[in-house]
Amino acid sequence: MEAAIILVFVMGYLAITLEHSIKIDKLIPALVMMAICWALIALGLDSFPQWFDSGKHALLESFGLLGHDEKMHLMEETLLHHLGKTSEILVFLLGAMTIVEIIDYFDGFSTIKDFIKTKKKTKILWIFSILAFILSAIIDNLTATIVLISILQKIVKDRNTRIWFAGLIIIAANAGGAWSPIGDVTTTMLWIGKKVTTGHLIGYLLLPSFLCMAVPSFIASFLPAFKGDLEMEETVEKSKSKFSGTMLYLGLSAIVFVPIFKVITHLPPYVGMMLSLGVVAIFAEIYSSSKFSLTEIDSTESDAHAHHSPVHYSLSKIELPSILFFLGILMAVAALESLGILFGFATTLQDSMPMLGTELNPSEPNAVSDLVVLLLGVGSAVIDNVPLVAASLGMFSADIDHVLWHFIAYSAGTGGSMLIIGSAAGVVAMGMEKIDFFWYLKKISWLALAGFLVGAVAFMFTRTLF
Image (cartoon, rainbow, N blue to C red; front, side):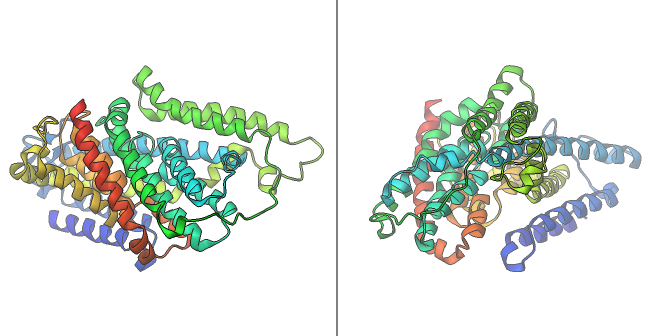
């Protein structure tokens, strides 16, 4: 039965990886894989020789001596435990996505566009790279990419020029997401899973992540595509809401407040995110009411805005398929973890590479363990980084703020930039600009690889400082 569960997982994994080839959204195989894996566990429960206790991170003693009803009760408790941990991440993401959509409802991101006055390509490149690096750390790399490419489409006329900028935005957004606990799904998983803390994550990864963004941007500054001035597209913009700037700063501040709330109260991050969403929603409703009179609607507002509250409208715009994908993949990985499969694989790795486990010491760098984590980064470019990090959570038992977790956060977060399908930011940019896979591979991948390697070397330096 274990072999069947592993086969289902591998087939589902392949379907997710080949999403663009088989034309099936990756959330579908993720959900099917999750359901079938747990169904097979329930059907073959009496045949399994071991069970993994996620709370103690160890195999459960005397599992084989338990009766069928006791095993069923244990499985239900384990399923509920993993659903609870997964839901913490999903509710957190739902809150963050809704705040971002509320900002967009008030055209808040158009405030960023107003800052861009230059026509010089290299300056615009650095402006967008730095904006992507900072924004992705606050509103996550996927959303930052969507916002900045949307702005890019409004100011850059030539698509062939625009896709070069989009490629560098992908690299910068993924780099920015790696050093923030709310910047990337994988770092959020590690943060909520009590593997990293905000202070150490920033301390370890800020410099490596910055170099991962800056090195490709610096090299690109000398490429022909970024020489000369840009032909700016002159468009007549609709009048934006007078509250756009206020809602931008309020929304971003509310998201940044979440790690502070966690440090003060020690409550799970989703509690702080719900508080932030509630505060932003209050102002959104107040400002929305002031935009409409009782007798007529401002002609600059769309019908959608006129007939919905900003909160309801924003909830209808969030990326629900991504939420369901994370649910499917995290719960499928939890199935492998519960059977002790991931633990057994980790034990095998640690027998040959002991530095990967709890013995990892930042003052004694190990080339083999570094290579394995770097390969994890390369792997995240080929397959999704979410299941890779989810698997590492089930495999390794290093303490909180161990350098292993921070290196995994860096590698999984930035390694996906090496292929356009390797990160959520890359996939959304591919869709928005119809970027060809092989064009990206030829023009951008080597820049991403250069930044990834320089950042990794910088991490090997910063880890010795703590």
